[in-house]
Image (cartoon, rainbow, N blue to C red; front, side, top):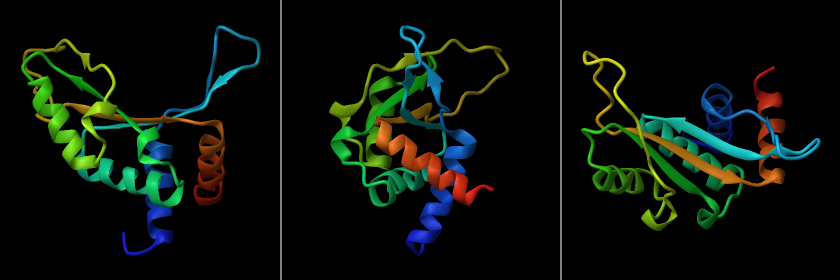
Length: 137
């Protein structure tokens, strides 16, 4: 991304396509989860979204978590190191990984697994939704 405008556009479109939408909390009345979660297997897209969080939404790195989805033939520790290196999220900020079962013997899972980038803050979520509404009309 050459400038803030391009990064804003890219981040908004990435989230509109691959981000978690507003979810109602089933434990309470009229309460919601304001989690900003982006899930993807492409390291380039993960890096762009991280830049968007840090530079455009001004999220502090310690508030960003990573979570890996992997298959039995993956090395979980190596995936954690890979995604930490790609995104800059410290390994200590990775949450419990999710082990998936292969659906079909012909299916070849992504060698890097899948990464979810997560932060939870109502103000950040609402700012992001405002940016998306402005960009994706």
